[in-house]
Length: 289
Image 1 (cartoon, helix red, strand yellow):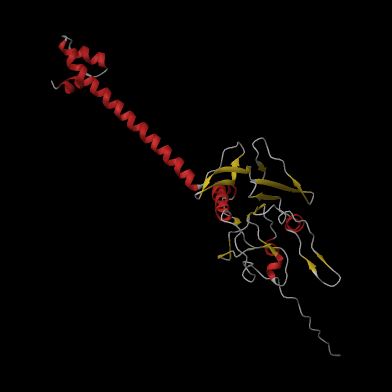
Image 2 (tube, helix red, strand yellow):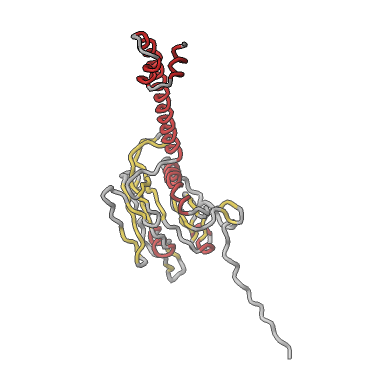
């Protein structure tokens, strides 16, 4: 009796980070977005080095976060303006990441931030994913995707025009709006730092910026700012050392001036040495006798 073999066509495997588009063809929304992302990344670097001594974490800006396989592929991705994923390698097989693929790594970002150029309607869209009877798919809202599918613990929406920041925390599978502390900041508990609004100049733009603070309310500095602080500290130590050197020279000169004056009064070399706190040999060497 012959055995009939049935050929089963298996579905293709989910694509990896080298097989999906890394952009959707849209422009960066505004001139603040790029320096804002740099500012957040630069100033949090020291904190993440402490948290991840092995270097395993990823930060991306305006980069694809793929959560669903679709056709075309980019319809299954969101692109947070800034997001941080803990405990994942910065490179994949030695290659720079093109985007972040949730179904390959299973680790959601800890925090995602959106820099809204409008009033935040797009970033607050809670429209769920649905398919109509005729097969038409309704595009889900960004808020719904982050809350229900990706499950990002901390989601922030920064309204650039108003300088307002809204933060949400995921609890019981739903986002709850956070309340700021007495400093007007939002505490990101897993990192032990705060996020808030800072008024100042960065990259020749004096604006409101998202910044990090430590748990005691101290602003986390960028690398350039830390270098300036270190230079100021070094300069201060150098100034103190120079002042000490000058004082020592002045004291030595005062001693030199006092020796002949005291000897002229008839004091002995031994007595002058005692008064000035010098040895007899030092008095004779300075006086030249």
